[in-house]
Length: 173
Image (cartoon, rainbow, N blue to C red; front, side):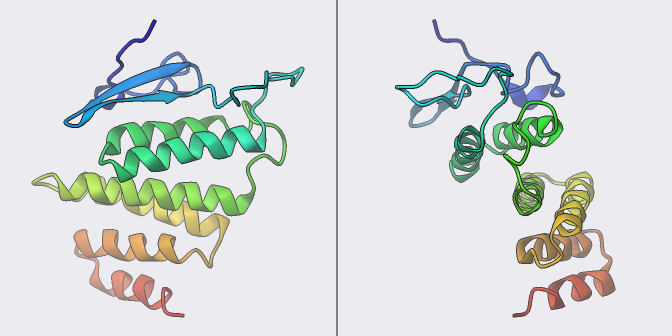
């Protein structure tokens, strides 16, 4: 039995987290997208005795979040990124998510906030969230170019031009 869930209008809780759901359908103009949040292989059971997600399962969930972003489902992608980041210490095996991966997740989250802000009249709140995520990304990996890039974008939207230029300069290779 399938169900529809709109994650965009409410705060993420443990009960509504994509990591708790097994299947979510998202309506799009081109049809319905169904995502399997269990992140299990079709021919395997989760044999972890502690029921924690493996690195392979993490990568599957991250891919689902990335696909949601690519299809313009920014709020849903954000919920996936948040679910991973809020649960990486408790719901995933040790070493399933490296600091490099955490940096990528935060820069993806910054990218989503930036895109969500582009769709709004007032970009301020989204720019603040974008900046927080970009800074967190840089904390995990100071060489994350996407983190510096979205920090620059957010600073620019917040009219902090000097900081924006500094962030952009760190993107230069």
